[in-house]
Amino acid sequence: MNKSDSERIAGYLERMGLEEEPDKHRAGLVVFATCGVRQAAEDRVYGLVPKIKKNNPECQIVISGCLSEREDVKKRLDKKVDIWLPIRDLPKLDKKIKGLSASGKRDNYLKLNPKYSSRFSAFVPIGNGCDNFCAYCVVPYARGREVYRPAGGILKEVKDLVKKGYKEIILIAQNVNSYRDGKNNFCDLLKMVNDLPGDFWIRFATSHPKDMSEGLIKTIAGRQKICRHIHLPAQAGDNSVLKAMNRKYTIEHYKKLINRARKAMPGASITTDIIVGFPGETRKQFGNTKKLFREAKFDMAYIAQYSPRPGTAAFKLRDDVLPDEKKRREEELMKILRKTGLANNRKYIGRQERVLIEGRNKEGECFGKTGTNKMVAVKGKGDLPAIGQFVALKIKKARDFGLEGEI
Image 1 (cartoon, one colour):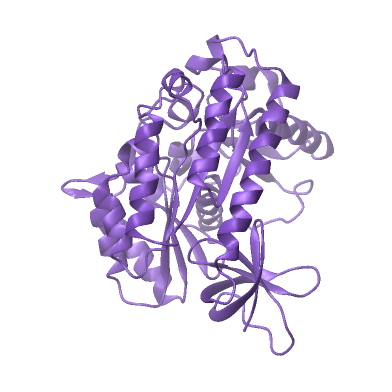
Image 2: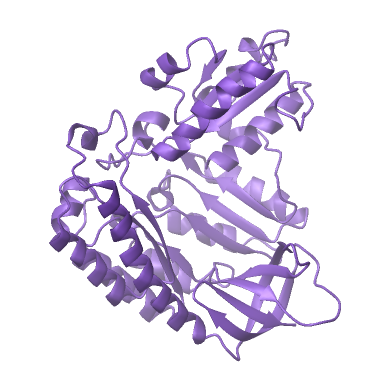
């Protein structure tokens, strides 16, 4: 979402007459689209802002994103930041920048045309904000309550992208599957995007298990352009921890969702997010998360060590799982994940897969992703495929988190 916001910020500033300056220490204006989900991301801002201000004292610095309304952050960066800008107020930025004439236009920021950073893959935000208030998460406080774009505006953006040759459309929001536009829900939106003419595929992120309906699984399974990959954050494998996190589902419900998805879409990849070391999480409770990993056989998991976030309900709890124990739990899950990832990937050997080529590595080899979100390295001699195009690859080798294939 921050990447998508950055593209809209860039598009907005260029329409205001500003030009991009590659060197942040020479720029007249630097905008940070900040993330406050974890302490490590927040710490990067504390390191970068003072350094830029010291080397370039005339530069105007703007803090947007998750940290823009945090009073403790404002106090820490006092006199080093010129403008504090919640992303929803992006259309008002022209009035705040010194030396820039105000445009007078005050659209919703989601209506602003972005400057896409890719020529073939585009993030298309369908909404902003979150109503779930998970105990560990700062997003509802940083971004506000859920607001969704009308389907017409989303479809127009996708149509324009497809006409320009874009091959991958990624629908994003803090919780995409709670999308509402009058009578239309997320299933309806997916069907409408799928029915647009053109050679492209559709991804979406991220989903909340409490809103992952059987109807949505059937919609994904029954549409040709929607990728067979579901990212479904579990966050924990223990019901007591899930209740403390305010996740509003049980682990039994979560497992049923995975079973339904795999029954409707054999071979689909399932990925997740997990937090280890949530306040009060015992070794026994963590053992249930390990059990979930063994049973669910995830293709990939993004594992984060719990980080207290000011303003959240969990911030009031004692962060009682020691850093070394958090790291140990993360490593235990990674060990299981590597086994299940490798076992899942070995099923691809000998198959032909459609792959969207994304780039080249340092050795000059091409790489891309399958519709199931598997990274594939292109091996063999001959003409290299074009970046941003679909190619057919025969899978020759499997690794824990990747594949190798030949044209």
